[in-house]
Image 1 (cartoon, rainbow, N blue to C red):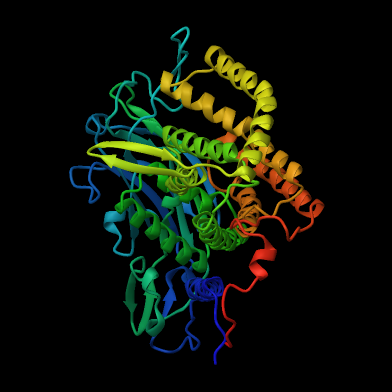
Image 2: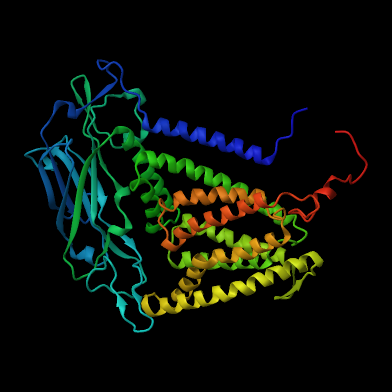
Length: 538
């Protein structure tokens, strides 16, 4: 008979297979098989091997095919593909672009001394210099009404605009593959194929320079709102070489970001993903991938065990009901705050799911039953036994002393923010004040549970499996706090959870297991060991 396999073991097995498969796919992306015999007819040799004299020319146009005219904004007459540089130029903005239109950049690499349109061996790419985005609302002092000037907001911009307006991408990053790689025609990567231009030179096949526009470097922080008053805007042109492996990886990442935008991700949401790739080196990026994979695994296992724990929960003995209620309130406030701050969906969606789960926990903790009479709900609360009443008494006593510290701090912080800080609206001030109280003093609401543990001299009533998975994720969140863009208060809260975790571990060590006490399912270990019926053989 085969041994019984648990669901957790199955999930871990699937996770290991997923990681190994991903590593194999990544290896296939960065490794390209070269042409081993350079005299073979299937070999495609680089044009750069002949050391041609090249020129880089960049034009702007209202259409991607340059119909209707084009304007030269920059040229590098003696273009050396191995030398990186960065130049800033002022670009004239056409009237159509200023009227919420678009503008394109056409980057050419061609023979020096002639125009791109005269060179049959030129390579070029088109990049959009504008994008549409809803401007960030202006923040004002709710007391004096003084407005805070918005960064990157052009003069004369309408602060009340709520529709998407054209924004200027102030950076253009170009790359050329400088290594003289010889492709094998039979093993030509599909991702590179669309960037490859090949011409026949006798019996030899030659490919022109691999030019690439790095769209991942276009960040939201570099955007400038376009209006009717400014006729020129700055453009930073950056050039650097790129390896073939990194080029292929970057192509896949850009395609992934583009796919997310097609599925409804906004420019800001896509920007969070871009930051993971652009602001970190490849080694840290690989570490981030493995950290994210383990975070996903622990999140799933914690979710599974947490749901199982509360689904089978029969008694609230030893569990702080006020801590459960507070956790529900705080997660909802955090979700509303992240939504108000237009945080990335990578953070917002898990926060929303967590809020729904916490509401369900409150329903279980207070034994709430809901009956509907037409469209009007009726709530019925269950009764507590003696052990639960004793737990409630300890819980109330802890909250009594805690309120003497917590409430003045929260009210004082809200008043300070109202006087000295600026917000978009009164709602924004209210949400920010509540969430600052949650982040700064929210860990204090874990103290009633610690107090209950101290009074009962036991931690057997806590969901330790789910807790341990969540504890591992707190340390993983510490890594993500520096990778994903999020509000500073949310980032600090990740480190606060580490302290709470260490205190719970200390109590776990301090209070040994007592088999006469209730476990997380409302049963004692002694009761579990009693036979429930006729014994039978497996």
